[in-house]
Amino acid sequence: MTMNNKVAVVTGAASGIGKATAELLAKQGAKVVISDIQEVEGKALADSINSNGGKALFIKADVGNASEMEALIIETVKNFGALHIAVNNAGIGGESNAVADMSIEGWLKVININLNSIFFGMKYQIQAMLNTGGGSIVNISSILGSVGFANAAAYTAAKHGIIGLTQTAALEYAAKNIRINAVGPGFIDTPLLNGLDASLKQQIIALHPIGRLGKSEEVAALIEWLASDAASFVTGSYYAIDGGYLAR
Ligand code: NAD
Image: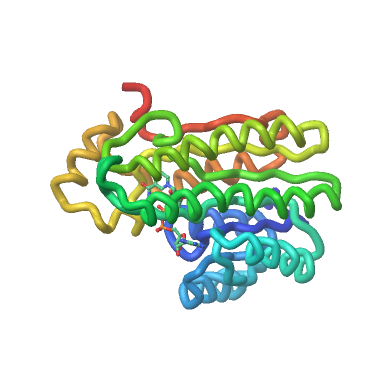
């Protein structure tokens, strides 16, 4: 239990990578706030962690809404006394269209939920961390934070944006004991991929030299390491976890 006495917030924690991360942080002894717009699934995860000896609380918040993100951090500190770890994970796939065919609404929605959210989250998380001497923030980008992918312009732009935002915030707060890093998963077997038809899924698998999709637990292990004191000299970095996708 390396995270006793730590308080963590995970957004998008009702499913996939966020869920696996919340479970792992709780297993390491952290008190975990499970945040999501999916209330039933989020509460069920908090209940399951609490009944397995961990400590968790569900707080509903839409990451695309700045005042809900502010309230999430205020409530976290009110309930658990501080904030040491934040995982800004919630995200959506969005509209699948080439640039000229993409709707304005589709573009704005993905940029809001996948990129503005990271700014909203960090704005309030950093303020809380400064009050108690520091912390660690992990922002979930993607392999599409460093390369393009046809028909996913908004997603790709948002994920690239997360990396610049992460590096800049890391520079600003490195001397104040707040480490800020980004993680770039390859394609991971979560409900986010539910919309893909079987043949596209096979083509996507073939882009990973390891020959399969990743698992949420594999990504959670990297997030947990970055969030932990074991990564005490790591800040401003972007870690791909992609079965070799970017090495091609
Ligand atoms: P998922 O769909 O399993 O989980 C995403 C969670 O985010 C869901 O519980 C959903 O309710 C929540 N969410 C969506 N919109 C929200 C909002 N406005 N406010 C709060 N919560 C919201 O997806 P996942 O695969 O676990 O994705 C998690 C993160 O990992 C995302 O940022 C995604 O872009 C990124 N990622 C995923 C993959 C992949 O292949 N699955 C690859 C690279 C990066």
